[in-house]
Length: 155
Image (cartoon, rainbow, N blue to C red):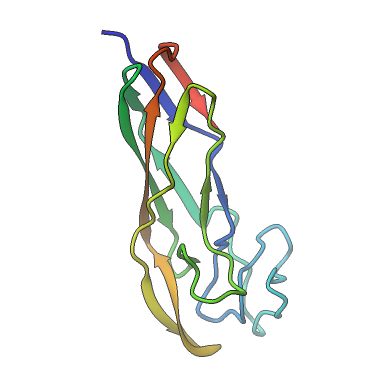
């Protein structure tokens, strides 16, 4: 019984940069020394989040040629930070998005994002859809009937 063992690697989670309850509008770009990428400054005394606010754990997925499977990406979010859910609550916010570079012999369906937590922050009375502590993003995949067997990493 031949199987394809896939590991989703080099995960591209776009947007949804970490924010704290003390932050002004939008997301923090951790590589930009505390400036927000949504145009608003951070509140005085607010710190930029560390680069590892979000961790990703992905178990290997096994699928037979011609078969299908489901991959689950477990996101760990360092407290007290949060990330924007998908879809984002407001047009000017960047939703957390999963991007997969699919090889020709594998087909990935649209990711299934978890339900958000609606939370109000000090900078706005409008509740925002966020994920805190953890979130699981699922994606179904199908291998072509003639897919090569063996292990591979899918960026």
